[in-house]
Image (tube, rainbow, N blue to C red; front, side):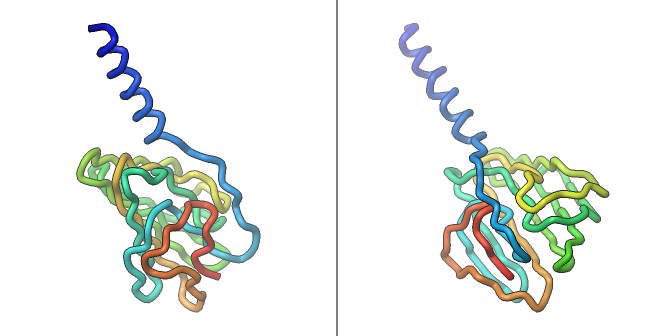
Length: 156
């Protein structure tokens, strides 16, 4: 019986560590906007890019550009909006929790200055993230592309 219990504890620990991993990322320099989330692009509509985070993706989100947090909307821990005033214009990051864990956590506050690539929050397990970028920028990603938070340039 103790071998089974040890196995279950080991599996649970591995799952906890795997779903809470936060790997180092190489943040690109320059006047560009980076992906706020790991995942697959499911839609691009005008200046809004929709990202689906599979259960196997990293679930920490990063700031897409340096700037000041001007607004945060958190509702029922299942949905969050973070608005940033950046040198490229206003950027909005929306995050929805998936059906399993239904928890969105925000790590920044209104008035905070955050650097491009800083951690801004986390969504537990499968989820969805979108980013609305300022007009006039060129989108550098395509529907179906897998992207990495803090590394993939999505617009410049």
